[in-house]
Amino acid sequence: MAKIKSIYVCSECGYESPKWFGKCPGCGEWNTMNEELPNSTPLGKTKGFASAISQVMALGDITEDVEKRISTGNKEFDRVLGGGIVLGSLVLISGDPGIGKSTILLQVCEYLGKKLKVLYVSGEESANQIKMRANRLGVTTDNLFILPQTDVSVIVETIKIEKPDLVIIDSIQTMVYEEVTSSAGSVTQVRECTNIFMHTAKGLGVPIIIVGHVNKDGAIAGPKVLEHIVDTVLYFEGEKNYSYRILRGVKNRFGSTNEIGVFEMTGEGLKEVLNPSLMMISGRPKNTSGTCVACVMEGSRPILAEVQGLVCATGFGTPRRMSTGFDYNRMSMLLAVLEKRAGYFFNNMDAYINVVGGLRLDEPAADLTVALALVSSLKDKAVGDKILAFGEVGLAGEIRAVSNCEQRVAEAYRLGFEKCIIPFHNYKSLSKEIKVNMDIVPVRTIRDAFSALVEE
Image (tube, rainbow, N blue to C red; front, side):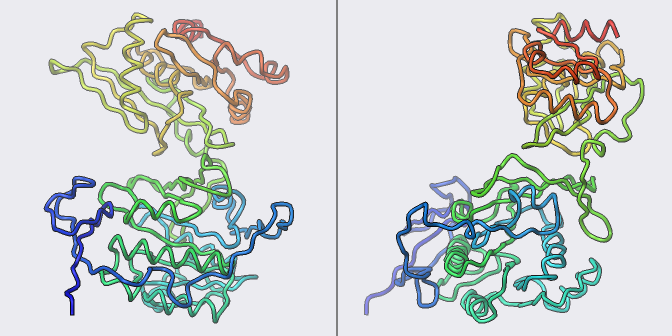
């Protein structure tokens, strides 16, 4: 009988090789090549896992019932999902340990359990441990069924027998498919288990939510193909020192990926923050230099965030630059523009930028706010408490137009701001009502923005 030759698979990227390497040729990681036996049976296509026979359908013949969504009872969660959970979809939720993945899913079960049957599959906790956590979170529904199991074959058969309306898998790294020889959490196991759940969700029309762990770099553990298989990828963000959590859609086949949901971690679980702008600017210091408020768009929602800048004399030959919540390279670019185009010199000064609340500002509209915070600290002149600024700064020192200007100004007015510094090219698009209620200052260059502060 011929000897079965083993193969070596990288646990980080899934690279396969007939021989062992200390350093993976695919991703360059060390000591990640694990020995596995090749499987003669096509994975994910064994008996019981194949979906129903495919039928060709015209687009006009497909009823809208296929697109029916299930509301989770959590407005922030529904916002990120695009309006709710789509029937037959496969959703992946990932994030750092202790960020709140299992917590929010158990809270969702409490609402869905009023009308739907939910199956919670746990590969990490026993039934008693889940019961203890449910009591702490106030989850008492009778339609929540717990299955402590890691064998994918048993789980799929249970889904077919019990016919739940929603299935939660916690977590995919603990699931095991018996025909794969590698251990739980390996690249092959994660890939094949996810494939099986995908066929089950599509074949039975049952939405499945799977929890995924992250690796040491913060990326989703397992092969990259995992994110391609699922329909939606949600990622929990948040600093350990803050109680706020941000749920961001990385991929969504049924909605926008620009939406975010804001939550606050409390002793009773995660609570949705319906007004994140007010939360971000609460406790803002009065009449203090180096602070300015920005308005960025997260999907269709305008969010106000406080940007703090600190400029001081350096004690070293090379000035230090640090940025938290804002891109470091873009901060360096803004410092160069301020020196070249506006005459403010930072070559012998340390510069620090911090976005309060753990929010990260990736939109170019925050450029003007960061620049004003830096100059305010350099000149030790406070930006007014009722002043808000936004706009993209170009290399020539010009202030370029941004999208959704009227929504940003309206949000600032709702929260009590009286003056807005905006790009000149956005001024014409504002309604007369906004111009009457707010003191709008259109600026063409970065010098004009500083002049508006001096006049203030």
